[in-house]
Length: 335
Image (cartoon, rainbow, N blue to C red):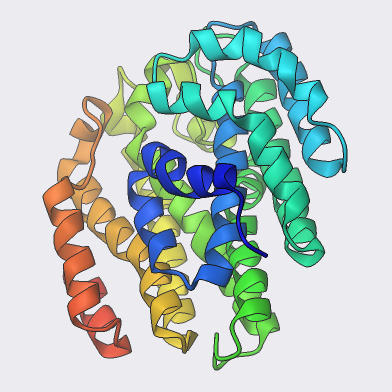
């Protein structure tokens, strides 16, 4: 089916404006895979923007999130999202996010027009992602004193719902659309994709820890903080005391990336292999920078410079995403 002009806009300029690194990965994908993956990302980014519009009370954000989550699951619910534009669009300081929220009805129309199998997969993954976003609102609500999930199991569930399920979604979409997707069976790829996604989300949490703590958000389990005689509100004052907890989750993130590289090694399609490997390569370099920063990670946000990301992309392209080259790059970028 030929894409409409609005779908072309969504999967081109709009997608590029709201995602620098993920857009690059999507552009590497075969066209038949690119549309459902790109649309799922846009919907997830839109719901995330609604949940993170801090100028709006948490109760209103939660209601808006529920409205959009229900619209995604419905065949005819675009109208329910139109009122959200009046509330949320003017509050977006980021122009790209303001545009995306304004185009949310178009995203839902695009969802209604794709194949039923792809639509079903998008609905399953968005149900999990919006559940995780609702957990965010329940944990942290309105800005105030830093809070934390209670247990490691809570954090594991959150990382699965917000990102591990994306690894499963990626596997299902690619398996259906690409005949030579993987040398391994889907039931082997799904758990690897899940752990890979969870590892990538942990990297986001580790990288953003300082900013999150200053904003009243702590993703590190309260039970682990208490074992080191810490409350979430004390982490920034006692970073050295917190480092063992931080290091434990760094190791967990590293294991997730290694699962990701096992996933990459099994992918037979070169374009998908390159797209799948890029987040692991960027993640490996990010983890190396986090290790180097030590306690300073809480004072500044660690980010891989754009020039380094461009070099990685060039290296992946030059190597034609060969398995040996990708593994060498990963080992070099890791600490």
